[in-house]
Length: 463
Image 1 (cartoon, helix red, strand yellow):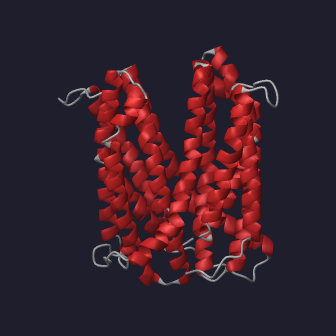
Image 2 (image 1 turned 30 degrees about the vertical axis):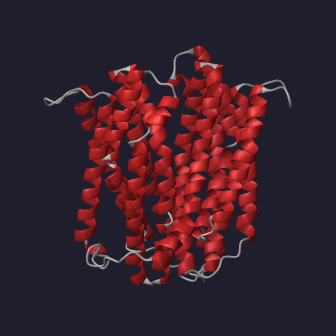
Image 3 (image 1 turned 90 degrees about the vertical axis):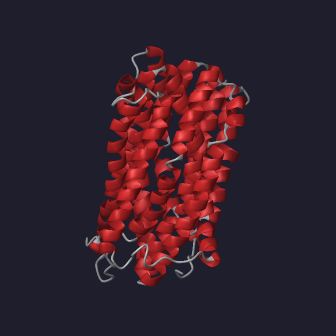
């Protein structure tokens, strides 16, 4: 595939050939997205491991700080994620003159989001007081967030510019700069946390400075690339600067706010479950966190395919190829189900070995193995729901899916999980497994309702 654009479909090809061709396009778009997602996850792993070697307080502070900034970032990431289907649609329609104005509206929103995030993260004292943290842990947490806040503009700048690069089908661009950020973060963590090169040892606070600097370097490098690359000569950021436009801003917000809220709802659910499980003791919480980490790692593949599907569907709608958009949306469910079956078999067959990789404590392993059995059970529902919602985002249908996810997760999954975990109302209290049964029910509900929405949805012509 020519990386300067996504290929237009050939309608005269047999159905099977067209389907396989579209799957190949998804793989080409999705492969770099997967690497970028894994690189971003690696930053969190690096921070956790290196802070843990400094002290238990530093590890706790970085963990708490991350749990505070991550939901905010996920919301703004989802909101700015509207740029990807919008720009991909303009690319498909070959209305290239609309791309830079849309990009600049996204940059203005990224600037506003940066101000909000910085203000919230540098004034979390009331939240830390509610958590009743030990004084030194609270001090390190605030110091970590104060340092991290300096890198927020760069983080949201890269998120907004991803709308331009991914929207044009150049998913390798963000992959390269995400990997660059991770590679820079590792040595900077070592320098700032442990006090090398004559600098004082900052512990967990050093993680915040390392992340800020690595994001800043990657963002500057991305800007240099976009302004010097031959591919982007027709999309010059400075020469094609557009003024703030209320209609353009409103269009992005109309699509993006439901995406951001949906991602926030899903991410916050797992945080709430972890808080509910805390009274059951550290063994249960540890087993839950290990199982959740395994599921999150596996989820990167269907998530990346879903993000590629969003780009492809929006491009095809812009190109006036609605039939091919419907073909790839629905045929991707076959691909998703196959992926889910493989994951389910892996989790079911190797749960003991997976648990042993994370911990040598037999009681924690036993909890992990039990929970991974439930994780295997909900793989198909989980992968199908992310495929459906990704296709709907390609159609720029985000409001109804937001309500579906809110109902499925918070209206069904969480209450049922609580009842099964702590009460005997439906059956004897199941402990942590109850929440995983609730998650399975919520994901099943989401997959059915989103699937119904996808097959019944009649998209309007692309804007």
